[in-house]
Image (tube, rainbow, N blue to C red; front, side, top):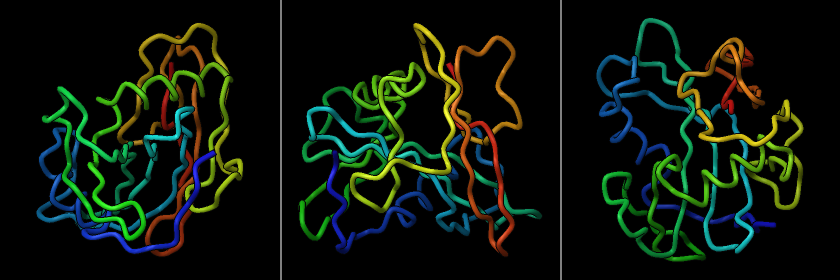
Length: 184
């Protein structure tokens, strides 16, 4: 199980995302994002080397707030062949320099998401060590190949989905959202 450190990050996750998110083709905002952390979960790397987080952020820059699922990995060294998936680096107060990647391009994260969809691992709370995420529901599939992440959470799993992950988040103003975050 991953240990959650109470420490500083520079830049913060939201600062990195503010610069990266507008370059994504699925971004719906207008201008610079106005982000807040809204929810999500973590997955543990069996080797204990890679931090894996599926963060839901709320963006208030458009006419109505939009929720985005942003899967991230945090590594202590660059990931070979993944330069185009790098969001940037941050300084972690305990662990030092961390390379932050779009987790969908990180083989450790993809393997763990597949394991979650197949029921072999459990989603963990984002900010508490060794605690199963209570707001994440997994409909287990079998032999999941090519998990799909819904960058904008879906109301329902796609037709023919072989397992899916549903989560909840809190939008600006306190409204709760619920939707499908990933499917197999």
